[in-house]
Image (tube, rainbow, N blue to C red; front, side, top):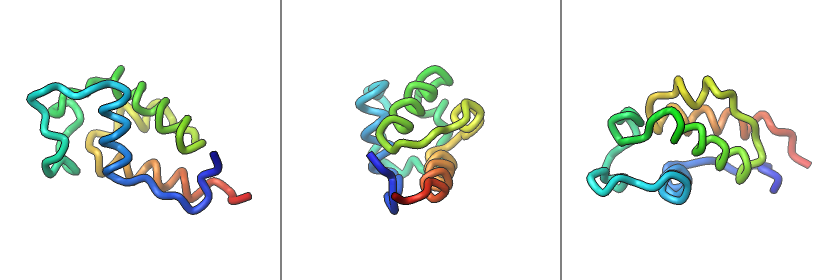
Length: 91
């Protein structure tokens, strides 16, 4: 899939988190989670690497492992993914 002018948003992230790693029943991904640490949401580094793999595959981009392990909140990860999407040449 070509990313073109596609953007990555919170809905995409929530879907990928739920599909790939699941969600602890005590975590409310429907709440205001943009600035909540992934760790507080129950997603450790391995879960984030799996999430990154799914994002890369679906959006046809490459993310550095550090982006996934050092990006602490959904807002920061969404921003990082969108930076990558904007850098992909359109075909």
